[in-house]
Image 1 (cartoon, chains in turn green, purple):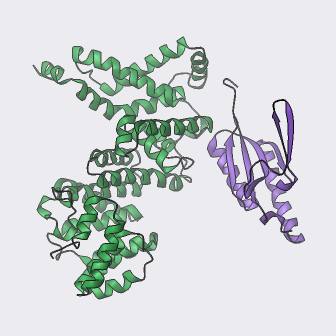
Image 2 (tube, helix red, strand yellow):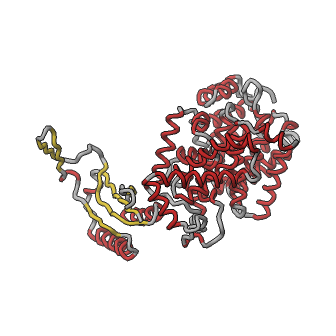
Length: 410
Length: 120
């Protein structure tokens, strides 16, 4: 009975979901086996076509991920045997990977790495542009189709296909290595990896039509946290995403306009995500190797603890911003710190700090000034600042929100 | 192994200011040491330093006729000043030589892979 149920549910969408979940691992394994991204991608695509025929008829294999990798590997070998260049590649493969499993290169004598870890460091190699890093990561590790990646970033499918092709060609001809960086390289190499995942999440937040990017970013962050359990900033990023995600639904009204932190219905915050995020933050605190993502996660954890805006432990938040500012002395961090100080010491103190920041082209700067000026009763200046913020705001919803005078009631 | 071109770009005008003698001596010494290091690592293939772009001549052939013009091919402020051709295991290895070179000559280095015939 259960089998029959399972079979009947195995339509194209269900199989697509399974592939999306599993394909990153398969693609990563096959890239290592064949040393070629296109061969790996095409083979997994072929395996998908076979699954669409077989799975609805025979039922889900006991280990779908293993089935995909094996099927794709066999398809790739069959296909390469038929092509002259492929035979050449295959002979190299058998030379390089005699048991087709362990490449045995000297730098890999350390811990056994999941191939997905090699893949993420290749996709996010600093020799690739951020755009290319994001596209490759979503396509290869996330298993998202070129069409979907294109739609998420509002570019034509052909443009995205070109971007991906160019990036893959660079990986190949410039020989960007397929390797987990050594310990001494890791801090530099981890930074773009985390930045890509964070960027994917924020792209999801900024385009509410594509909430899939938010869950995709969280899925990628979970994979990273599993693969690199000893990297505190990886844990910090995951916690930050979970805590931000816990509020996403209450951040927007049905008409698409924004709801500021102080006005959000806190009972709608997702408690399960908060608990998971806060547990990670606590582990980070015990580890005591703070970093920018961990501190931002900690700040969000403090917000999540408060039942109302007034009950927020602002001194804790200011202390965390002090630490963050020491690590990342940017005007944007300084702006957020000033807002927290405003909650503790009043709008005048915050405005004095804000006015010192050179953020004239950053709309939250003007929105913050507008709010502080309004609280100080300087309505004309506040209106001008709201107008300036609205002119710079990236989305229609934010523009409308700011033109209406930001947080109207408080 | 792959070969990479590490090119040193100089900005027009900047390079013409003659370096004080002592500074030049130190510079040449640093470059010499770096080249020794590249050679002893087995990565060195070839290197060269070029004269100023205004010494360049461009030759074109159009309808069988040879046309010669004075000056560099591209009208730009930046020109190839010198280069290394190195052999490296992968881009990371090439980039680490590029970083050493950039630090030594105090100029940005462009790294480009050489085209390789399939199977080569």
